[in-house]
Image 1: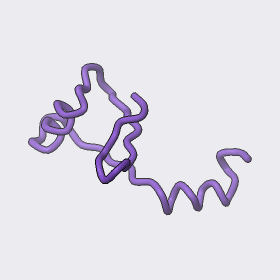
Image 2 (image 1 turned 90 degrees about the vertical axis):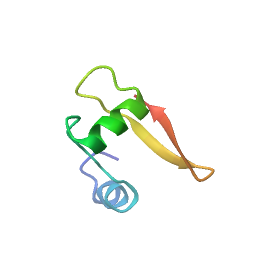
Image 3 (image 1 turned 45 degrees about the vertical axis):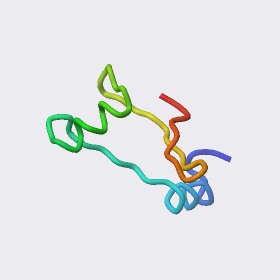
Length: 58
């Protein structure tokens, strides 16, 4: 399986959400603080586990 595999692309498109925001906005600032983002650009992988958002990768 490669990153260009149609099945993988379909899975990513139906099971993931990509979100970005400027930290100068109110929402972006609050999320950056909650995620303890210290260096930018910042990327994390968050999953829903037991009805809570959990960071599994930074």
